Length: 152
Image (tube, rainbow, N blue to C red; front, side):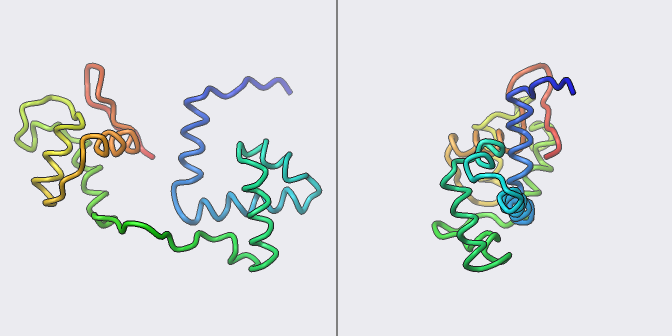
């Protein structure tokens, strides 16, 4: 079979989709364990999934110790989220509209406008840098003729 290599941006989009939710991350790890159980080495599986061999070894160890439950995401430590999932969905919906619909002079979203919008709507003060990350995660383009957002 003659296959063309997948472009880097497509690969990145696929990886983002694989890591999108707890359930998809669980399925991803389960697939890695299945490949190892089918006779592939951790190193081969790691190369196939673009992970480190140590990561795959950890998944195997967690599976051996805790079964299927060991492959599920653990509760994350660290700073709790400032916005709820519903609020994040509202931000994404808002970014599908023009900033002018919310009283801004700009035609397209940029990190500064998003920062002001989040501050006004939710009384949360994100840094401009964090707003850049939010826009990247939501696939919002800050350049070009029109504001674009793609489905995740």
